[in-house]
Length: 312
Image (cartoon, rainbow, N blue to C red; front, side, top):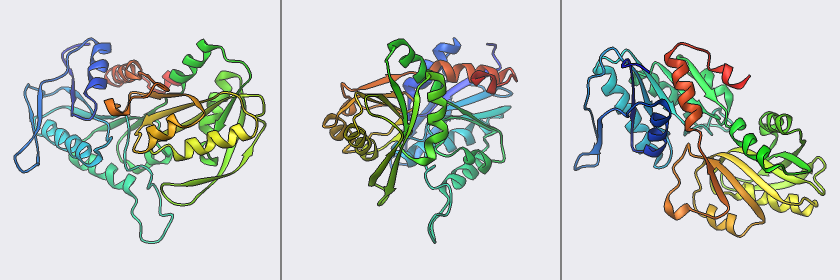
């Protein structure tokens, strides 16, 4: 990598940024991201970025609003410092669950955040496992959506678990589940659920044969783990053996850890797109790093090479 590339990070997931930089064998750029006395975010780029290809690594994870503002202000600072191109590396894209008007008088926040990023000065976006792939169409700038599937599949391939069945937690996740099932040579099943509100869902049926199978539930986000745990209960009642889960983005809001500890879930695999605080540590949670994948994608973008080739 030559001197025309630069990496910067906000405070949302500094460890991921450092790991990406290590994989690229370059140092993180020097910047100050702090707070004024009144709580406003203060940003200063501490090195010359004129004419450089800049990548800002900042997932919009909780505290979501602070993370988004840090990202927007970093982009604005880099734009005003004459960076040639600014790529927002948003490992977890927040505000994505409201991607359409499914009720009267509600916003489309996924589109709003897309507009804010472009207005701030982002030239393109690099993200992972968007909650809905159509969000890419909300941008008027290029978007590369990476997938964690190969990271998880590699882990399970080494475990060599017999009688695997991949389960989608809802109808909307069938495409993702099918990708896992194809790579693992496993069966496919679906949890038919009814959402009661934004925090609760009721499992109605299990579509597919799970009796005597070892289960891998796949999803993009785990927040309070209510849907996950309800799914585990339903699968166990249908005769499933061990139940694993692979979920890309570990928000793990209360009471997620308590629910996981009290469940029959054998292991929850997540990635490091969101930093897990010490109080969220759990023996059943294993974190797999996607830093090498992001590093490879960043290198390809910088060299104007295909990113989609990573998933062929």
